[in-house]
Length: 196
Image (cartoon, rainbow, N blue to C red; front, top):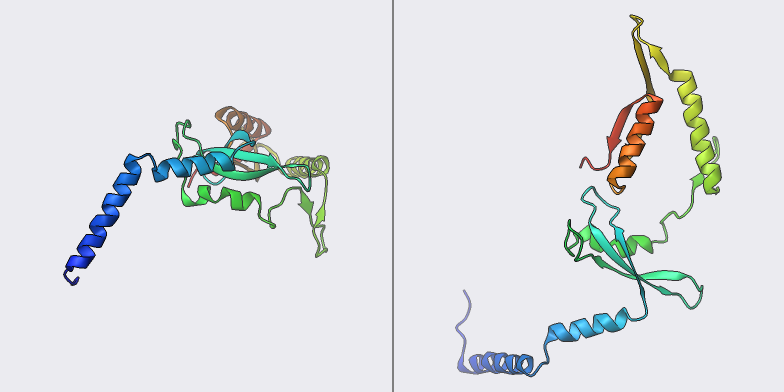
């Protein structure tokens, strides 16, 4: 049980309440001060809208970037929820609120890497080389495993040894085109990150 409040504690609490309400009444609202600090922090930044990369909800983000004096490259300095976005209306879950940490993580990959068979080291490759390798592996697998007809001679035109996983952060149009392309090649195993 809580101990009863004595007269001195009562007056301290009342004095703090009166002082706080008087300060707010005079225009010294903490909300205004916080807004001014935020505005100062984001002064001279470039605002870019984006989508959170974590799950299928696809919350809207506003990213603020500023030129880094040392590297002369733009660097994201602040990320927050987009209040104009119809999905999240400015709010973010704990993972979404930590997107800035993911962006600046030293472990984040920013380029394709490959580990050749028998090697223990990963090496950087260009995006063109990575896309060409993926396309070559897909073509070789499809040529080796494409099934035109089943055991009864019925045309099935399926390719069951490769699957497609569509990202939940792509637009509806991009997802539609990816599925159409995969189905056109005969893929039967399609899934999306949006199924959480």
